[in-house]
Image (cartoon, rainbow, N blue to C red; front, side, top):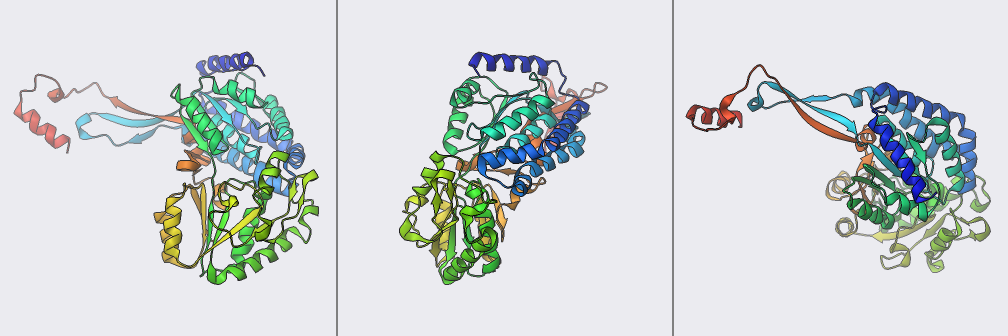
Length: 460
């Protein structure tokens, strides 16, 4: 799509938004219900697209993509009326007589740029939030997941007129053309490097953004924990979608005293969950493309592999892999892995782990497996990270009642449920002052000592 075509779409959306059509809650509800039914209608095709792009099974596609998207839409259908209402707040006595309220309003014309790793979920979920908040939207899915982009285009085109919600497919040329436009709000999910570019480009027009990025999310396995259960849950989260999950445990910080037991349990769980030959398991996915396959395999040090390591270049498959005796200086620790490779670093002193993590870039997620309440409290209260779990991984992002987002290097802003509605809304603070009385103390000339005393009382 050319820059002129993109400009034309945005101009039509500006005109449509100015008409006020998207503001009534009844309209928003109609669009959310239409989106819900259309997603349900195309579930088989969504599954096929995700299988083609990422090798996902139908079960995983529903569990991690279309099912979660439908959950978000359902939440918004149920709560959008309440979320859209003005919220009355207390008014100081100095403003007598008046009442104050906060009114959520749409930003206006928004851009949603989604990634390739969960290409359906991370497009439809923020789009539902944008619709619920009353915006128009241009959606730009990733070029790395073309089959999912095609079904997204089919769904969006069937549901909405282009002047309301439009989809722009393509690669860097289209991305550049979109970032050259002046939007009222931008929602981006992807890498830190591209996030910096998005933020820089939007700064020129003072456009607010939400950035959902990533980073090296640590997973602490403390000496006082259920090692068997920890291994089971970590294997699930680490190798889900072949490790191509922004909140996957990137690396393991394991207490030296239980390391051997932990590795034994991890290997056991890989075999139980993925079989003796994961590369031949039809429910085990693939790396998205040759570029990322080469990048991930380049991070693997064969001398430190204690399990896995097998690859199939033709199918872009990497077996679940475990690396032991890893140090912070190893190549695999220099960037986010975003693949099915689990490096294990050992520790003896918990204080040193906390000190080290405080000096690292703030991750999108952090996990701790422990029965030690003091250690758990230190992690939850002293360390800065987007979100996480105690004695589990990943599941915090599937809760609509909590915001999901990063901090620092891992992003800014959050969404999901109410937080998603809030992300795509501006909250106007309004005072409704009554006309039947007008206190004179705020007006010049300031002569009365009585007024001065009253002012001190009112402003306390």
